[in-house]
Image 1: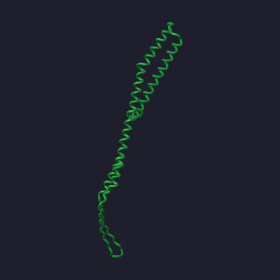
Image 2: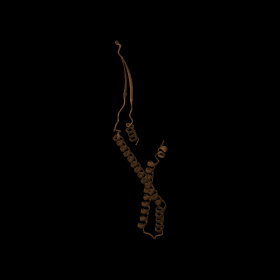
Image 3: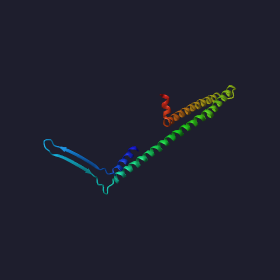
Image 4: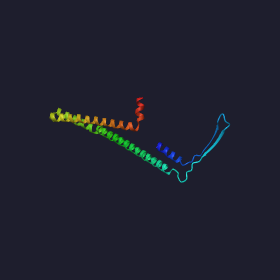
Length: 167
């Protein structure tokens, strides 16, 4: 944007005519000839006001503005997606921690109790233990996914907090 603005300012500055005034004094040794010269230069810009250059610079400025807006929108979209992913992963981890894993533990405890009383065959007890282990691994995976998503969001949204903690 700054480059496009500078090009636009430069193109607009060409519309102003710059007069040039100069003088020189020449002396040739050995002769008595001395020369005094006065110069005036006035650019005549009749009918031409650099409309093409100014128009091109304005078009480039508009393109730069649109590109900047597009990049900002994409960055906000990316940040929103990361925030949504972190929130979804947090919800999933919380569901496992508060609902699913405690229920799986309760089912496994009930199966242990039933097996110890002889009301449940060994295969059902092993099935309950396997289910508890799989549920615990899923809960761990959910916490890991949440940590990854939260880290990705923090890296994009608040990198200074991550850099400040390591320095």
